Length: 188
Ligand code: B4P
Image (cartoon, rainbow, N blue to C red):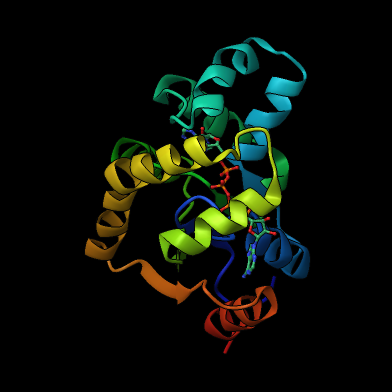
């Protein structure tokens, strides 16, 4: 990736398109896409000790406990391929994860350049996730994930806003329109 922005965090409610957009930008700029949701789903599929513990939380639409998540992110950010940059998608999901990440980045001498908040209204999100049809995408679980988001993850927006790192982007447009808005914002 040329230019200044090489370490990005994607925030947004479930179904906002974090995974979709993070994957597109990671391909475009050739930096790793680190999705904690994907890491957890792989662990569940492979029935690792982490996967066995995480599954019940994910199936119910709850956050997986921090002690499991922090280790996962710590180890991924120590891999060689992330030295040139990364896009974090789905982490941090609460203020204590955000604070952990700040300390971790300081320790490994890295700095997040930009935190993107994808804004999409709840009713659009429900429709999108029902259309996606993942194991944890039934209406009851989706509604619970939205509640958890508003209670636990939305405060992370203020956390980064107070640190002048936050940029909000309208995610309630077509996938290509959102990608273009992100590209223009990152490399105008
Ligand atoms: P995630 O995998 O992070 O999933 P998500 O928030 O549901 O989806 P995302 O926003 O990435 O939406 P997507 O692009 O797929 O989390 C899953 C679970 O893992 C959590 O509930 C939690 O249990 C656990 N977890 C993960 N991280 C954690 C953490 N840090 N701490 C604790 N627990 C954690 O888009 C959704 C759908 O919309 C897709 O079908 C897509 O095609 C469509 N779409 C996207 N953009 C669109 C657009 N612009 N227009 C129309 N459709 C669009």
